[in-house]
Length: 338
Picture 1 (cartoon, one colour):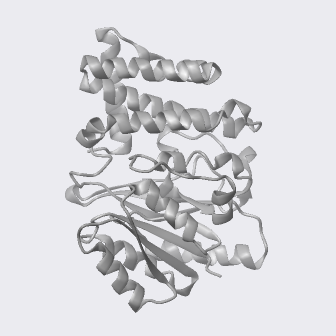
Picture 2 (cartoon, helix red, strand yellow):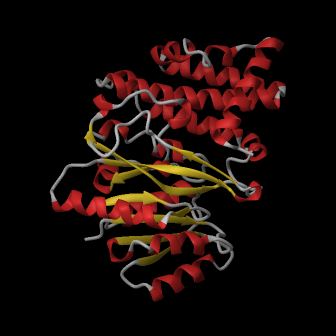
Picture 3 (cartoon, one colour):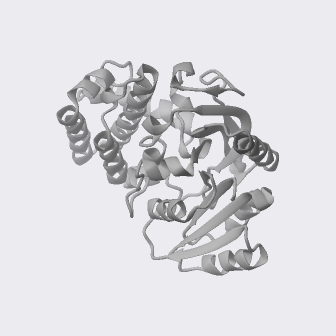
């Protein structure tokens, strides 16, 4: 059985997918690479088939009708045979030495019959256009190199949210929590990094820069102008996260607080984008989003609005909107939308 299944969702990715696949091939026979062609119109499938032919038993090409990134991840989960599961976007890549380190660790987990639900590693924002990179490390938030539970977690800074790029889940856990990401929807990686967490009982953090997250394409989903155009998608995902579970029902206080903080981040980013655009229509959408949270879960709403950045995100005055735009620029610096 494979230690790790790596799903690479591809849509018209012919221009860059080889780098992602080659980086995962460093894992050798311990890894399974599922290249999911999401109904591409270029030669993505041809490239995937070539790798499957050249690396039988390691690379598997899967063709499906277009359903979006979430649908491709769902397909990966359904077809994965590895004990652990990782998503690698087709324009990103793994660090070779870090991948080998992770696989050595997972091999020991299996050999010693240790229960582990989630492995966490660092990720790196890569901006080749300006020769800049930024490492997102969890050193201050998570004890490293030890098996822990949520009780051992420290304080997460806003820039330290666990995201798809930093998480390796146990494959069985993803199936047990019945994770199914919505189709034809952007930003579903937030659901992926949120919904399974209450099922995670055991964690481990390796302080290694495994995932290299490319930033810079003009059509990239985290590009500022693209995010503004797709704000309805951001709102949709935020509402789905509000609806998928009630964090107030989570018994573990540290996990409960972390999940509320994650929702707060989603509300703040959505609000900031809406206010930064500034049209009456989008200002109304901001108002409706906060009303949706309040009507859906008043306790979570009160918790978020008591936070330093949560409260001003509802301001409707001109000065209040300036504060919100400042908040937007704050997140822009943290997450590197541009």
